[in-house]
Length: 421
Image 1: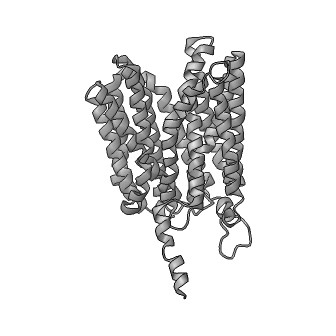
Image 2: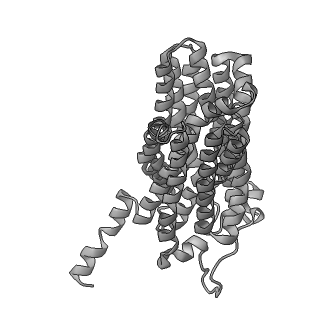
Image 3: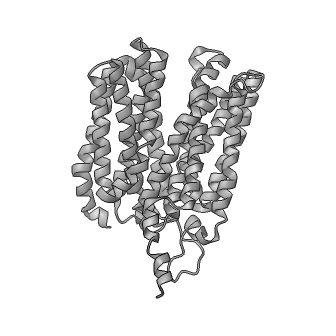
């Protein structure tokens, strides 16, 4: 082997470890656009719904439509990925986002509450496909890089945490009708993801990883999606479901109750905005290093750290209702969610070879999204029944239960006869 070959080949593993691949970078941008679209709707839809709703009680229905359709659609998206591959499903979701944004623009122009509900519901279809960007990145990652790719993709949300709300407010008067410009930006950003997905889908050298790997000696171009009954390590799959479910429920409940509790305690609007902003930073900023930590310490330890951070946030919130309590609770909650989300996703991708996880992903996305929806719907009832401190104690119970599973239950399940079947 020549010196030139040695020089060109030796640094390659170091580069893969130190920075994401070009494909992962493209998917990071897709993820940033996705979260930016979602944050626009989260920022404005409740306000717009209140102005258009025939009754105050219906004001949050358009926002709920995004979550409900997104949850149902996430299961269908996983099943579609198993049959058609990631690029086709992701592009279909982006086209749905374009249509949903256009319908929302038309709704505010016509003062139609019903049309706004339909438009946000269609955007929910785009939201349903966004969770699969990280799985697509994991399947396209080089050998040994699947878990770190999950973390890199989530880092794309850090930019959106700041850009999304700014875009929503800065474009609300772009046209003569208030908020029409903001919803138009939803369509624009969804449209911007299409050429990115086409670039990835057209990469011939990666096509097998996108649509399913070719098994050694197998003449077929794709491998069949893995069935749940075929999973050899059922303990890891159950741990993935529990980790993603608890992370989604605890994070959503505290995030939903935080602004309500802050306003209830008489804190200013700027304080309420600050706790949500730092919560979003906590959710996405750790992705810059959580993947590297998972490479070093393993997904179980990262999940345990995330559980401890989540519990620490609930303890901080349960100790009082001052601004520092709200800030500490939501910041630690966001960081804990990040570690749990990355670890739970890593547990999931460890259960299947690249390209064969569509059905398993559908189940996991359904569990995670369903838990978040349930927590969101119950948040106001829990808050008015238990108060800010009591809500944190309830979330603490979820965290403790997950911690016990990670310490005891997951290890027993790993070595059980069922796990080896």
